[in-house]
Amino acid sequence: MVGVGQVNGEPKKIVLIGASARPLIASCLRAGCVPVAFDFFADWDARRLVESADCVGASLTKIDGYGDLIGREMAGLGDAAILAGGAELRAELVVAVGRQLPLLGARAGALAAVADPIEWLQVLCDAGVRVPESVRELPADSRGDWLVKQRGACGGSGVRAIERQSEAVLLGDCYYQKRICGESLSAVFVSRGLSNDSAGGTFSLGCTRQWLAGDFGDRVRPFTYRGSVGPIVVGESVNQQLDRIANVLADAFSLVGVWGGDFVLDADGQVWPVDLNPRITASAELFETAVASSGSGFRSVVDLHWSACDSERGARAEEFAKLAKERSVGCGIEICEAKRIVFFDGPGVWEIDQASFKRLSRLYVADFFQSNQVGVSIADIPQVGDRIEAGRPLLTVRSRAKTEAAAVALLEELLVVVKACWRE
Image 1: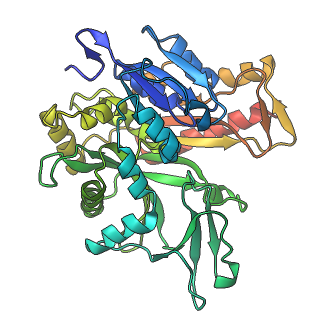
Image 2: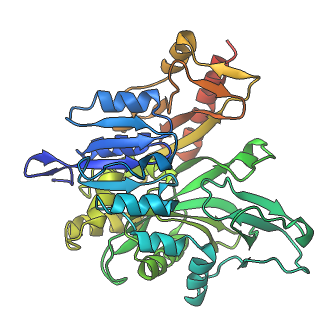
């Protein structure tokens, strides 16, 4: 089965822009495409992927911020671009890149429309979907648990809890949302820009369980994203609710490609959508194995994303229908994966020297992300000379097993070994 990687024998080049491009680079290579990546870290293993790639023109460039790319010439760098990791929230960057390259995913107008959570939550409410109470100003007589959320923040970094109006001191562009009790989950959606009754038009690819900093005792930024485990089985009732939510949002805001949403699942099995991410999300990489082994013909998440964004909406229709059907009958979840972002807990600053790098890199399994093997590996590995301050992200631990419990157990074992590296 031919994926999106080549046209007339020439591999397609994709410009990848995100805070950390490593997952997109791996997915891009798996799709047979050439990655031209820009990110904030340019970690050792991301560079290794690019340098060992059997393709001409692959590159990885470290940037200090998305502003570095505003005036950069992009037209000759690739055939299309993917924005992720907060890059899609920078309107000026979206416009600048979109003028030079086709954007794979939601267009500038759609991204601007969904930037206001009050707006897309109201669209869901008008469609009969239950949503948490969300307001721009908190009433003086408000009672109960509320969250104040900063628009434009990623990974839960702009979220904090308040209990009363007197605590409602807003910093920046914020809004309030009533807190819902339940499990913090995330869904990965696929939209082809077709009508809702079209086979495989918009559907949920699957769900992951989210880990937040508060789950590990962090009281300073308890809602910050720390990792995920999945795909997990949530039941057909939840899948049906998610598909309805996805179709309403995709239709209202012209969402296309692979994108995601966070939700709370309450004790009654009710889905409460709380966040919308109109891009390939951090947890999407946990679906690489499921997509590649689905039998649908898609080789990776990037392959799936590009195909869903293809202007020829009928392209690969049978493959999309097969993937949607497999999800609907609960197939394709033969492997569960887990990832957790590890923060250096100090004391002081850890400067990565040759000895430190050797201790860490021995935990890296070179072909782990390109295979379906059960086991563990680390990712986002700092390079020699990097200085990691206490409280800052160090790397990511990854595991893969037959069940969620086994994947988590493997992850915990690897985490112990990683933490021992900075205490040796």
